[in-house]
Length: 272
Image (cartoon, rainbow, N blue to C red; front, side, top):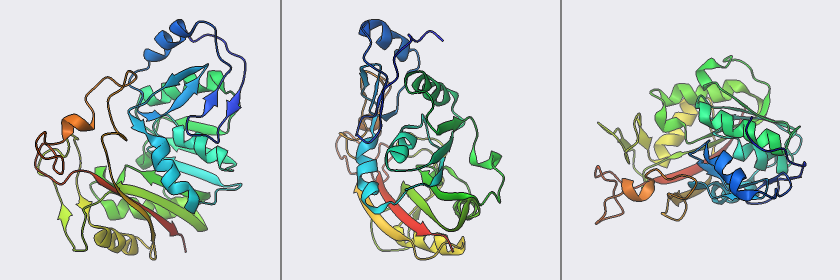
């Protein structure tokens, strides 16, 4: 409610989507937007203020987009944060994006975006996947990015993704993995990279086995990338500790707990 009024402007098909014309009092705008700290997914330009978020989420999107066809799709984004990826999905041709995320500050950031770019069919609901009807089955595409390793039963999560997707649709899965071709699974006894509730990190081979068990065989590996200190870092818009503080200061191939440093894989799975 404290955000200034702004003339409508919407440009989505770009690394930092633009919402709203540039406002004259940028200092006041930045102060009001900082009330919604921490800004984790972006970058974004709201009312002319460029928000340099913790994650360069555009890097992840640019790795995925060449493999995606979202034209006229109804999309569900699980764990969507503030809805940044929803903006990119609309920019790639999606008809509707429904995101769910139980973290209220991210829902507030999405509401702030609506003030600068009203009328967009990109929604963020304060829900978790467990709040959704299990057999919805109406979405052309379902995204689960950065969620799987937080689930106690990963196969159950994957099975629910299938039920949320219509037959002939697609699931886009992005998660932490272990490097290598073995059947290893890391189950951290405490924290992983200072994160709570990291239950299981598999190799890509084990991940494919989980997908088969969930009724989602034949997944295509789109990308496997190490998370770098340039992709996830503290900024003026996210001043808390970030990845640099989660890695061993003398050996950045390891987390502070001694586990392998974060590597993320993205997969595309067609639903039968």
